[in-house]
Image (cartoon, rainbow, N blue to C red; front, top):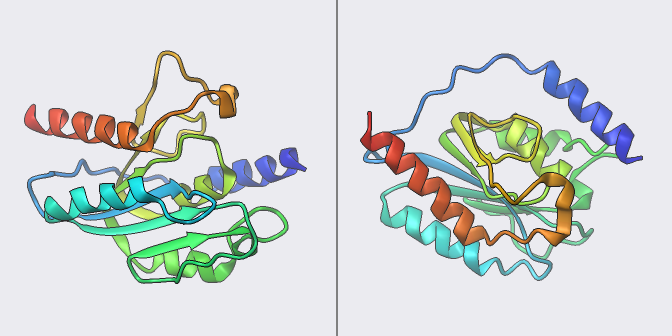
Length: 182
């Protein structure tokens, strides 16, 4: 079944129109979207801390998470949302209402804090309307800037634990370093 899900994803990814990425200038107010793997209890303390850091930087932050369970207890808010199994169809693709909500806004920067190749989050990264997308290199090439770690490969799966806060700090470090060399 996973091969069918992957086949559908690859087919849809190839049909996506070409993008013209624009590098974000972090010294300006930006509209930022964060994609992340939610914990089972939907508390996500590290994601909330990251959101606070971005708010301190005068950025408008929207967060979309995913957890593999049927019943999501967190409220759907304009700035925060957690998706579950019921938000995806039998082929693993987001339902129409999810795609409508996702495409309703355009972002300056998409920060993908996904540390495992989860298909539901890969769909979010693919369909999100963002000028610049950054995330960990999980093998699909959906982002404009990929971070590769020497001792991490997507095949390692659960054995390779990457701290979300550490990944965020690496991404922001690279974005500020590249910006300072502009």
